[in-house]
Image 1: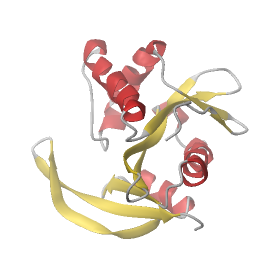
Image 2: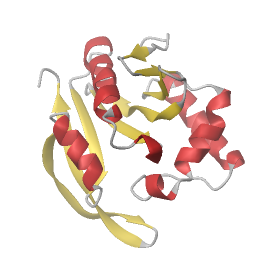
Image 3: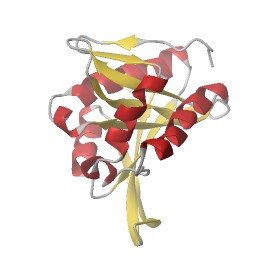
Length: 178
C-alpha cells in the first residue's frame, strides 16, 4: 500500500486523512443513537473515542486499510467517515465501511463518496473485491449499496451478539469492473 495518504474529491465532498482535531466529530458520530443503532462500535466519551483515532492510524500503518474523514467542499463541515478495513493484499480484498452524521442523510452523499473509495481500492490499491457486512435490519444502508451496484450474496443468520441479542448480517460484494 502506498504510504502517502490520498485526498479524494468529488463535486461536493473531500475525503482526507483523520487528524487529531477530528476527535470531537468522530465522537459525535459514534455516540449518536441513530448511527450506532446498526454500527459495530460506539463510544460514551471523548476519551474513549481516542481508541477509534488510533484504529484509523493503525490501519494505514499496518497496511490493513485506510479510512477518510468526509468533509463538505462548500462549507468545510464534517459529514462522516468512510473507508476500507480488514484489507488483505494476498486475497486482494477489503471490507468497506461508512457512516454519516444524521443531518446529512438522504442527500446522496454516500453514493457520491463511496465511488471515490471504490475507485481508490480498485485502481490505486489493486484490490479485486470489496465486501460489505450490513445488519439485516439496516434498510437504508442496503438501499445505498444497491444503488452502488453491490451484489447481495446472502445472510449470515444470528452470527453476532449486539446488546445481548443475536443479529444477522447481509453480505454484499463489488468486484472490480462491475
